[in-house]
Image (cartoon, rainbow, N blue to C red; front, side, top):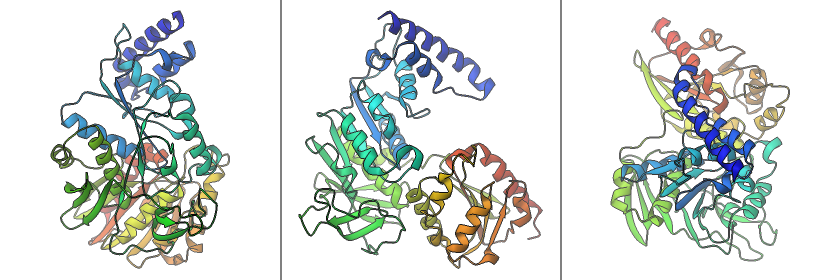
Length: 459
C-alpha cells in the first residue's frame, strides 16, 4: 500500500498546484494528477476510494452530452455528484476525478459518481471501477487508426464490463444493444415518426448483416447510419421494444412526449437534432432507474441547453452566427450535423474547419473519412456558399465537388485570416461555423474574423 499512499499524496499535491496555477497558465491539467498517480501505483484505480453507486456513460457519439444531461439533472435536484465532466474520459482522467473525490484517508466524499468512459479505455477502467449502471449511446465508426471497426470496440466493451451491472441501451442500435445479453437491461429509443423511411440516406451503414446469424438485415426505419429499426428475415432477430420511448416530437413547442413506465410523460426538448433527442431519451432512462421522479426530471431539463462549447448563437448587425462543434473524424456524427444544418429554414453561408491541427501527413485517415462523410447533404439551394479553412482545405473542396456541389458556391483558404476574403455577409442569410473538436482552440479567432467581416460589410 506504500505505493498507493505515495500516489495519493502526490496526486493531491499536483491537484492543489493546478487549482492555484491553472487560471494563470490557462490550463486545467485534467490528465496530470491521475497520470502521475498511475505511474507511481499502476493499481491506483483499484485502491482509490469510490462512490457507493457509479454510473458509466460510453459510446461513439453523444456520451459527453448524455453524461452532462444526467449530471445537471441530478445536481439541480440536490444530488452531490462526482464526475469527470470537465476533464478526460480515459483512465488517467477518471483517476483524477476519483482522486479529487476522496479525502486524505481515502474515503470518498460522494455517494454517487457519473463518469464518461472512452470506449477504448474500457479494459483499463472497468477492471477496477465497477459501474452499477452503464449507459451506451451507440457504436459506430470512429477514428480508423484507433478504433478500426465498431464490432472491434463492441468486443472490447463486452469483455470489460462486469456481469452484474444494469445496461441502459439504445433499442435502435442493433450493435450496441446486444452488449452483455445476460445482464439486466433497459432499452430506450424513438418511436415511429412522420417522415421515417427505410431507405438509406447515408453512404455508410455499419450494421447491414444480422449480428446473430449474419444474414442480410431488413430495415423498416433507418434514421442515420445504422440507427433505426430492423429485422432479420432468416433468424427473426428484431430491434427490441424500448422501455423508455420518445413517442411524439413537437418541434414547434419544443416538447418530447415519452413513454416511461408505460405512461406518457412530457419533457422539454433540449435540442431538436435527432442525435440529441436520443441523448435526452437515454438520460431520462437512466434518471428513471435512479429513482428521480418524472416531474423533477422535466423541471431540471426546462433550464438546460446544449453546452456552449458544442453550440452557441451570436448576432452582429442583425445577422445570426450559429456555431456547432462537428466531429470531422467521425463520419456519422459529421454527416448528421450536415443533414441537420441543411434542413434548417432560411438562406445560409457555411464555414467548415474540420481538420485536426496535428501533423496532417501522419493523420492520413482524415482523407479517408472525408469520403465516408455525407457532403452530399450540403448540396442544397439554400446553402449559398461554403468556405473551407485549413491545410486540407483543397481535399475538402475536391470532396464537395464530387458531391455535386456547384463550384461557384465553394471557396477555400488555408488560413483563418483568409476567411474574410470570401465571406459575403447579407441580411437574411445566417452564417454557420462548423468546427472540429480539435479546432476548438481556434474557434474564437474564427468568430472574431466573422464578426469583423460583418462589421466591415456594406449591408
